[in-house]
Image (cartoon, rainbow, N blue to C red; front, side):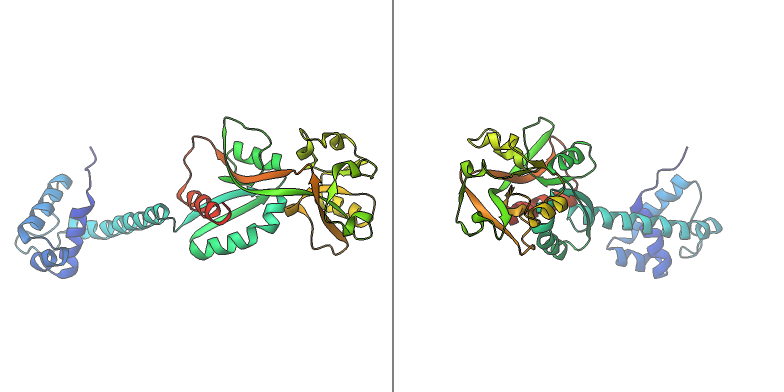
Length: 290
């Protein structure tokens, strides 16, 4: 039967070796000398062999010389693990995976991640971007700890915390008649060459629902969609955060009626505890955006 080794008596043995005697070791570990001696005798009893010579208590037996380096190795690993677990609990270390829709990944995450890693330098973050369905699937599969996305419909397996609203508008080229407008009514889009995209379903259930079927083109890829818009091949509707503002020739005009917004929030598995690192990120993002 293997002996059960407790950590404290091993520390006492090393203290005796390092301090050169039982009295000095007792002072070092803030115990009385009889208490320290008793703990070591109990350890020797468990091991079935003496660690120190009886005539000279500071001298190791051959068995003791065999044990001491192994005690040190065990205590080093034990203390390292203790520090790592403490860092995890205190949110100082660890790793988390996140997924975000592209508009959030490009517009919000750079500043959020910069601030987060400044506060939690020991936590490593992996960020994956994709459309809302991709983010949902990644969270459901447990591939990521958190998602930053919009949720199209509630699911019992998912928990969603709303954080901000992102208003829908019309995106057109700078030479389009809409470009200088303060707002556009949805009926004005009926006569336009409309380019659909993944966020067009935001119009479903609104007065402008008919527009979701009134597409000359449907393009899910943002790079291709932007190229079509810059080429002047049509107009589209996009949430404000998704507007590619780095393209000088494009303009964003708010949709006045109906006023449509998408809700951006944190997505996670319902009923599942987050790791300390993921919990730190969830709290951080909630404070920053909520």
